[in-house]
Amino acid sequence: MRNQAASPRGGGARAGRPRYLGAMVRSLVAVVALMVTLVSCATPNAGRRVMFVVPAELPDGSDSGERRAQLESWILDRAGGFTEAGHVRGAWRDPEGKLVEEANHLYIVSIKDRPAEFERELKRRIVRDFDQQEAYVERW
Image (tube, rainbow, N blue to C red):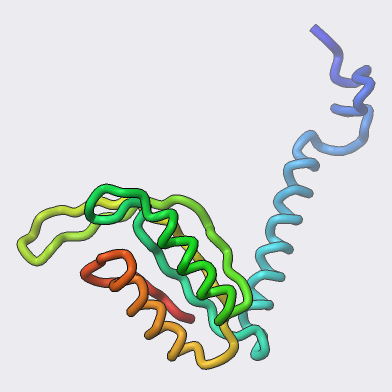
């Protein structure tokens, strides 16, 4: 068994610092990054954030990739950019009470120019282009 004090990496008592210092530093960096993100969201010139999902598959079972690419192109033209946050799973009950589960793609967009109009048009496009009954869109 190796002696911690003699470790070439400087761990244990020889380094004169607790073993958890590295974890503390990583946690501090994460907290600072979160604070910077929250402050940037509160900046008046940052615009509004819009979060939404689109289905990974269309109701007929085909992949929605082509329609996502078209939507992304519209977003680039209208908002200047987007973040696809990845694959997510969601569930809801239809009007008859049947559980509907879906694989989706989550997006976040920052929009400065007429965010309410952007949100309405986005919802309209999701319902129309992805053959959806409704669109899940949040704006803050």
